[in-house]
Length: 264
Image 1 (cartoon, rainbow, N blue to C red):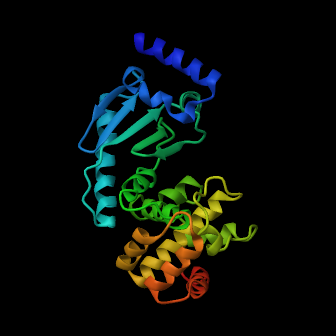
Image 2 (cartoon, rainbow, N blue to C red):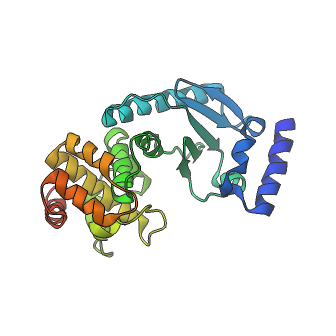
């Protein structure tokens, strides 16, 4: 009962102050949530939200995802990641000030979790683990996260946007019939995709390009690229691309454009 009184007071405060995204609620996590931990995760939920078995299964799934993502990046990390689960999007927004079903920052992942909504365990975790290496521009950062969720999560991104059986390239071709695909040069200048005019199309474009780079040139070159790119200087990033792949960026973009129409 005491926990719910604290939660209610804090929700009212957040709604009145509109400072949820400034993360003050994180400082009160131990009084607002109950918690359970595994090797790499601290899971925070409201009392009564989930059964102990559900929480245990959830942590087992995330530990599996952690191993797969770490293996992809070929790194050994000993991160401690906080995951906050909310029963619905409104409660999440009221407390955190963040809109949407999922959100990741620093070593924290925030998600809506209920009978009908289970967020892909790979996408945000790919960011958290990847940021221990580097924080590349959105084209590579988000492209890698979507690529890994497709690779390990049984086309998780495809299912999320309503095309459960289609590949990223197939979805990209469908969406681009009515919308212009943004150039890779433009995406290379983005720090994040979430605020773009057509985020879904941009996510697909980024993931398609990452998949193309890995399949055509191999994962080792891609990991070298991931570690080398800047999050702020698109001209410098083009030079890095060209040095690693020994091709002009425009030529790489043209090759990607051709393959997305032939390899679905």
